[in-house]
Length: 139
Length: 139
Figure 1 (cartoon, rainbow over the protein chains, first blue to last red):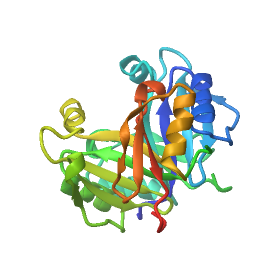
Figure 2: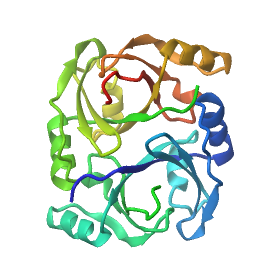
Figure 3: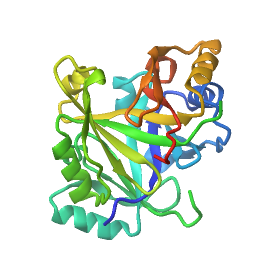
């Protein structure tokens, strides 16, 4: 595969509303999408547009959320993952596997409605990388 | 100000060479720029192009480097900062100050040759945000 477009930066937060206020009032974000729940993943998310990519704010829906541990360690929130687009998630996973890199679990439907998977951060220099099949309608 | 273009994602690493191999061999990065030292900032950096932004790999030049502490806490490396472009750094700093947000130190010349400043992560939801005056020639 070729390194694809950066679809978004994932930022974990204890409060999407508080984070929206920071990006809107301090940094001047003008395109803030409506937050929505992804109960299957235990998170509430909100996308904010920059001119060339998006920020994905992620708030845990409960203490069992996959990001609850991150927030426990980083109570103010912080950078959680980066997401690159790929044309085909199964091809990408096979290619990573052939090179000895692990992915976390099976591909699943992500916040933009296409298949996603996470690369194990231990195989990616400590950074949690999400791969996402390119959404049909831009981002 | 309006939220500007995401110029780059800053990724700290104990070894730029090891990280280049990961982004090139695992994720398929094809445009890897030559690494260079920024001795005034105590770091060596390397930019990798994605179709819409850049990754900035950052390696400490010594134990006194501003990112040596980050690597001590995260020996494998990890996400360090995100950088947005602004038209005028002094206007941006004044606007942040008027809204009660602190910046770290005085503006200085960054890796793309324009003025940069960092917003205090305690005022930005735990995320270290760099603001950079837009480079003249794209990124």
